[in-house]
Image 1 (cartoon, rainbow, N blue to C red):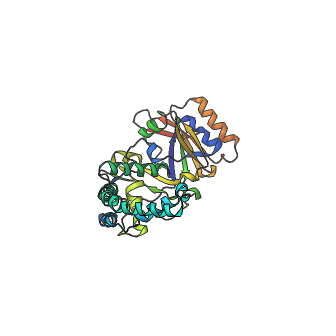
Image 2 (spheres, helix red, strand yellow):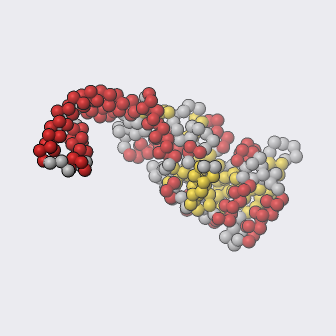
Length: 314
């Protein structure tokens, strides 16, 4: 793990200047990022093969509780409850007489369905992966930051072709220090690992303890990306979506917004192509709010000779 920088940055389009007014920042569900591989390693199986085989074999056991469950469902039915006692006995005998035959025919099919689902194979496996992805996207929000404010590509991609701005955040602030353990997942600021090979893993390894399994999540699920993205020098922190301050819908997508204290903002860099009207608006917002006056305003300018930006305090 790299040493955490004092300041980390986030690029914004110019319309997101409202963050300086309402103090709300977005934590994004992995499925809404522009990288389809986000939080999506190659999952080999849900758990260890021996555990899957052990539990699938139990499906062959007719004393595994299946018949009892059938009886419980029938006996809780309102129509069954209204039957006379002798008819209830008859109904039970009929169920019991047919249950063994039905279970013996059902068991092999159920066993194979269970195995393919848990080993993530075939249609059942694809459905299980789909459910896993949906579960992640309904649980986790990610705030993505970077250790650079100078990247030309990021200014182009994330700041509307240099018309937007970059905020610098003080990483010593308590909002970035809710957890001092990489096993906590939430509230833990950590750099992204870049790799050419897509991680392959199982979801939960029964041979490992809880901390080792959580460490697997950290290394192979949330804080890892393709080496194609290495230029972003990304750091990220997670929050539970249920902890968001408010939600809004944009183009049918649910956006989760979280409170960011104004004193966590260290500086703001204005894009070299930001219109003067927008610059004046930002300057007025900062000057009119005593909670923002500590923020340094910095203007980006194109260098006359090289492919780089120069910056000056205004």
